[in-house]
Image 1 (cartoon, rainbow, N blue to C red):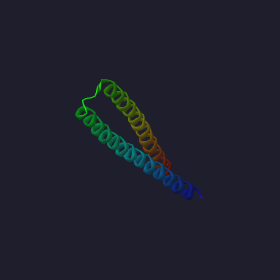
Image 2 (image 1 turned 90 degrees about the horizontal axis):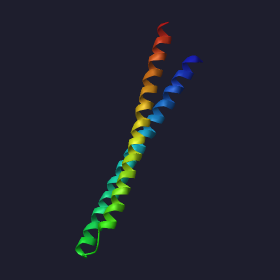
Image 3 (image 1 turned 180 degrees about the horizontal axis):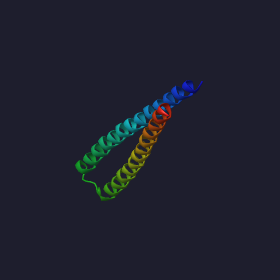
Image 4 (image 1 turned 60 degrees about the horizontal axis):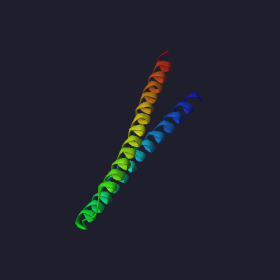
Length: 97
């Protein structure tokens, strides 16, 4: 019974890790897509000889917000990795003792 609980907890940890990696990948793809859209929009505005200073400040704000969100996600993944390592070490120590 105890072995089933341990293997079930490993499965839960692996699924959570996969979800975090998928979320980080999706976040990167989303940021890159937004970057391409913003770049194309800025080039269109420059070619149309429009005032782009307001657009630049908005783009800078959005990029900063996206970067802050990515940093939060990285922090969560680091904490998750530490928790997983601690749990694995704890399980190994229990098996020895």
